[in-house]
Length: 68
Image: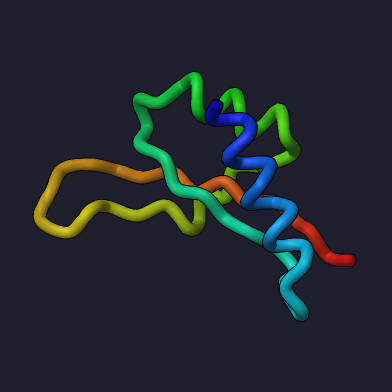
């Protein structure tokens, strides 16, 4: 199910004029999600990682270049 959702997001983004890349954030403990994103071509973008305000939760950023 997760793969189908991410693939739909990718296809939708490819149809948006001027869209060059998309990013997804994921908590550091979500290893299965990370594997899914990487299998679809996403790459970690550590310089864009961020903490949830008021929480001790680090979110990793994964980015997929989709330039046409």
